[in-house]
Length: 432
Image (cartoon, rainbow, N blue to C red):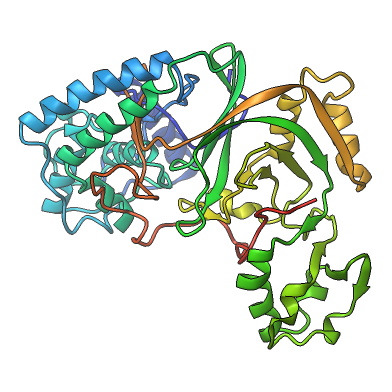
């Protein structure tokens, strides 16, 4: 059973459940004295129309089979003409009326996000909202139930392109058809998602922050070998040049405020002694103190040896996990609910239960825990896949690796959940 809550749900439609939910809510409103002004049905989305979370790993024989079946289904959709683009629907929400709503219903029905028996009404009711939520869940968008520019753009990616995405990704999935291990980790970069897998089932699910378009997270197979609690961060030379020095030119207090120290050898020097308008700043070593509130690695770093100098870690800016756009790192992967993740990694390492994990974190001191058995870690690039329940997921081809010119939804304004400003730089390589 999945422990970690994450906004991914899967298909299902039950009219009776929706009617029952409406009856209960309507009764409660009547008791509270609320009047039903115009609509005959309540706006609460029928719970059975929500997309349920799948416990099937992205890398699994079941996902391969389901994706290959979905390829055939999309071939049929394409053969029947695909779907019509929707226009003027990007601001629709419950209570909206008009021909754009009827067109939206037809679009949702083609991909099974709305029961085709719901008719061609021009009213945006709770069933349309539930269908939009389901579509948003399948495309990694905020599940608001209201239309947005990003949702409309995703709907207007043609059936032919979606078919090509499925075909490309079916090949990718088959490349992982060997024995991946009894316990392993999957990072799906386009989905900005981390799964822990044991005995063929997803155990925990974590939103992630992954590499920017110009600082991409690599596709690789590696292993998690060690956990560093309360780590220092040694700023990589590339980030010193690209980010840190320009910040010091604008704000001479930046290093001090962010608890970043400057060293020449083992001697600490003052930021005021450096000429930041020359290349002098590139000659020194920069180390950020440990601390959950300000250190860019947060409370923990997970070492995964690889030639790219990247790793997995916590962050001091957790609001980003609620955003649609989580391509914000310099190549490393930030992991939501990292305590649960590292507890799972250390499960088979003697002396490292959840209590010991918490004690190490709360100590505020640098503590290292080496896994008794390294856990395989797969950083993958899967933009389209299906699950055994018949649901299909699509994500933007953020790094343009599909070769089918998938239009991006990321340029469209999307709701964001993070109130915090995402740091302009974060761990890359050369850390201690």
